[in-house]
Length: 472
Image (cartoon, rainbow, N blue to C red; front, side):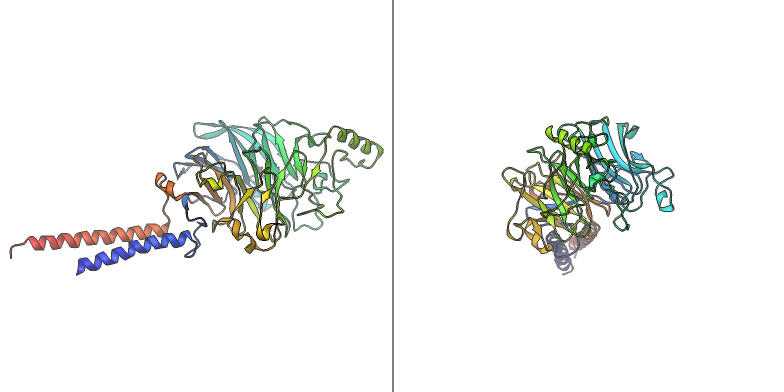
């Protein structure tokens, strides 16, 4: 009877464990991350990161992750977080400052961070940072060495620093930088023409997407005017944590955070003007924008008008376009990526995926035939989400925590990084056997209990076997 009882208990435990996996996958049991497609699963790659903000793949099993407040670059090899960082620099860390972005090309690694002259977090004690800076490093013998400064940008506010970096299809670097405004500051002091504030401060490298060579030089002056306008690929951007290139068209897209409404997804053409501060969300009929050039205080002078006309004749200057999608109630969109892989199923291939910092959700958007807009239906036909419930049909996953980055690995799987220190991946259930997942604490406990019960059963069976073999 003892053996029968133990077998029944063990069976219950293992069946219960299997059911718990299913329930957790459906998100009905706990706050564990889950996906809405039953053919996909979520696996934990690593935990224990400290406020990560961005990641970059060096190869299929080699990932670099940057940690915001520590100013460190961590390395994950074969699912193991190495104990020593590749690099540790002093960063200002108040609010949205810190180690913010990473990209790689060959053995070159590019880092964007708010550099501190006096140790991590010294700006919390009143020490002003040196600036938001973009460096180029060489990866040698497990370390990042020979750092070279490519961009030295203002860090006048602890908010809206941006920092995401991407290597474009053209091999150039694209860096998104916020408007450097403290949203709680009244009056707001750092106003420039790249915020569509006429007759204000000349562009200083903030409020836009900068495009430079891998050695830090300008690529093409699409706005006209003097340096640093020659670095701008786009402007009129308030605050962003995500840029991505469409692998089919090569076009650039971004996510943008609004003040208390109207978060955006944009397709970003060269000389794109996002409209901020004149407009957030969709533009009304009467908006006044800075179109460049003529960005000096003499913009309305005869010289300024002639300058604008001259550059317009060459096809230069800003071009406003409405967003492709708007969250009326903020979702705080961050990571954005195109799924250039069929590893999750052909139906997802080349879809646009966006992560939410606020909801821990992953949104899956299909694109139109020309891939210049999103294919939306139902309550989202007008490109506006007026209620979080309206996005139900486009949610691919939930409960991922405050998402800061999405990437497609060289293995074709989707990787999800959250600022709470966890890195997950999403893959087809049929591929799961090819990858060894890291078990959660709860799963480890169930397996431990199951192993103990199995050992007990084996011991009881052995005792009974010995008793049956004794002479009677």
